[in-house]
Length: 193
Image (tube, rainbow, N blue to C red):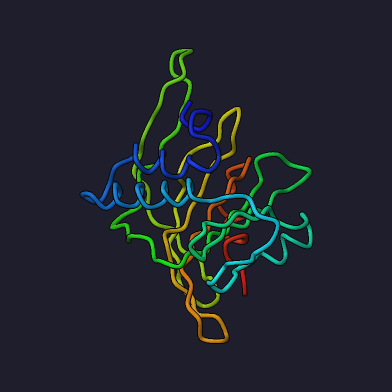
């Protein structure tokens, strides 16, 4: 399975690479997000982060402090995980450089049982939108859930300005075991500086 092969950090790039859309844009998206995921290293703090830190304070109050990873270029990734439910996570990526734009959402890919055989599928999907600190942000479902992982959802890259005027570039990725788009939209919409 793709998710088991590439692991949590690389799934976004793998799914996007395999889904194909946007006449080359998806390949650029996959390249940049894949490189970013590979550059992240565990950290104990946010020292060296130069972009304004976008957080999920509500999830932090309920789930506890996030796991911190830094990219060595001023960016970070905070991973919030529900300690009581596996496959319930939100990753907040903060980056010094913007991500490439997608012309359309990647196809939804996953696996399903057909004639007692596990088979892959792809299908078209529409953008969904959520308001993040007053900005309309597009998002989509990356994959369906499976035995070892929940469903994955991702925003495209977006830019926000903090109260002190500094800009950062962001991407939100969620894993959710019940494939509830409403809950994902609440998670995405709850982030703040």
